[in-house]
Amino acid sequence: MSHKERSLPKISVVLATLNAADGMDFAIQSLLKQNYPNIELIVLDGGSTDGTLGVIEKYKDIITYWRSSPDKGNCAAQTEGIEKCTGDIICILNAHDYFYPDVFHFVAEQFQNDDTLEVVSLLTTIEERNPRDDTFKLLTQHTYEQVDFEHWKMPRAYSINSRFFHKRVFEKYGLPLYQVTDDIKFIANDLEFMLRLAYYGAKNVTFDKNAYSYVLHDDSCTFSPSYEQRKYFELVWVALMYLAKDIPESWQKELNKWVVKYTAHFLLTPNISNLTLETLNVPAKFNKGISFYVFKLRIKRGLRKVRRFFYNLFHPHKRKAALP
Image 1 (cartoon, rainbow, N blue to C red):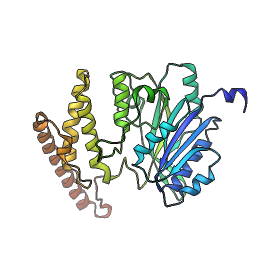
Image 2 (cartoon, rainbow, N blue to C red; image 1 turned 90 degrees about the vertical axis):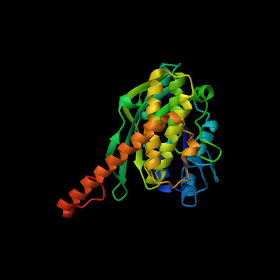
Image 3 (cartoon, rainbow, N blue to C red; image 1 turned 180 degrees about the horizontal axis):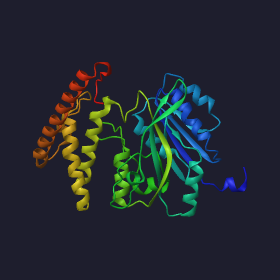
């Protein structure tokens, strides 16, 4: 390793996984393609029964630390991994996903140029992978305006995977949460964590540059219908949490909208997670707004069913279960 390479800051990567051997191999390959000489890889496996241990053995020379045992879920494992990091810069990698090439060198340069910098935010793409020919179809991507944040300016895209954090972020502002209550685990803790950084004014710089790809897969929490109600539950819970704090009027208006909108969605989403509205303890002042929003959603969903009926009626060879 040259003197220049030794001077590069260590980047710690936390990879939490469970029964995702193929996706984990793919994700680690994206680290190797960074050609970055100072990477620390922390792997937290929740006790996989597939070929995950074989993947760990395959990459044992670049894995700094790993464990394989039952844990409290992905968010808890990520927090555990962050605590074990020794790098100056910390990022999160999910199995199945990947970093774009040369991102690590770019990020390291930003932190080297400004030693007061706390967060480097880049863009995330969302793709679908075809395993037959290993090609990718771009579904959507975040924009600079969605990702950017500063003091009292909320990001509109909360994913932490395309963000790189200086280690002092976690020392100064705390670790990501992994439990809503003693009985309810977070599935999307990045929302609260990014609001927290905007609340306290962490020093961030955002670049209009793709850094991370979220690859859809069957066990995805973010886009799985089985987690839809949990997502709405967490949005309302986080909104109420910050409404109880000393926040500016702009945040109050936005978070009040969250409570109304996402409580309505919560009520109309099939309950397969045994969550109840009583657990959220939504104040009575929101009841009127929630009832009206529920009414609007029911009208909207009814119109969609009518449109779908006539679409299928007049296009019998192009029948669709969902709207075109």
